[in-house]
Length: 68
Image 1 (tube, one colour):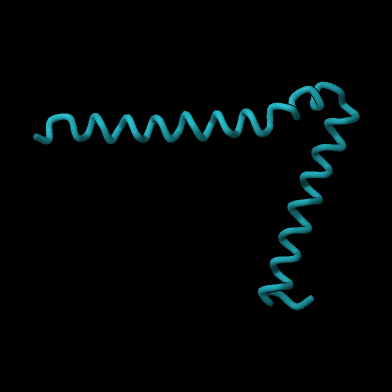
Image 2 (cartoon, rainbow, N blue to C red):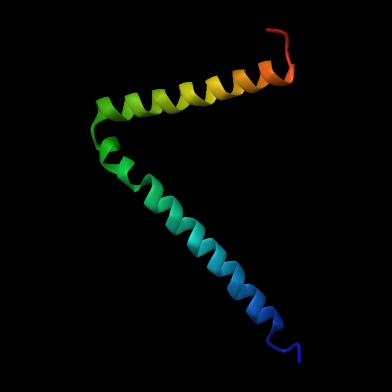
């Protein structure tokens, strides 16, 4: 009765990983050609870093984690 249970569970896990990687490759695949030129690569990295800093500072201010 339980002989194929763990095999079936491992298939669901590998399916989940495959679907997640496929969605990520599809969502961010259009960025790959932009990283081939140094100017656009620097601009994209700067944009990502600035976006992360903006989100972090906004969350800190909203949650009152540090004095602003």
